[in-house]
Image (cartoon, rainbow, N blue to C red; front, side, top):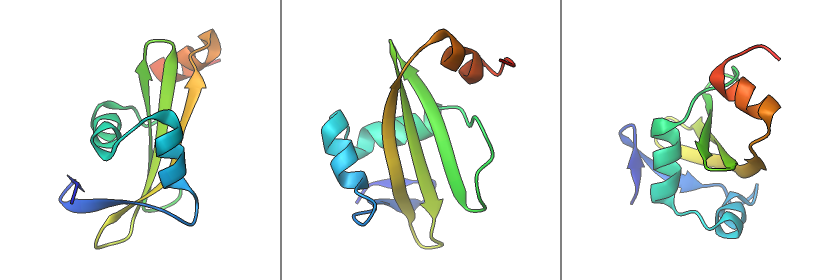
Length: 94
């Protein structure tokens, strides 16, 4: 079982997070790296953490929800690193 922040990390099958991970070629160890090294760009609902992490010309986005006993991976995505997105990632106003 893969752990992050002291709790197991489980993909949400109802929202197809597991399929998103397979499509992007990511494993749970990659998700943990994104969550640890990524930046929180905007505030989400209570108990939801969204992190952005840049790797080359790609920005990976992971959203997880705290379910008290475990972390539920809600969304895994990837976008191109455009100038505008890189400014957002650096915290600059667009």
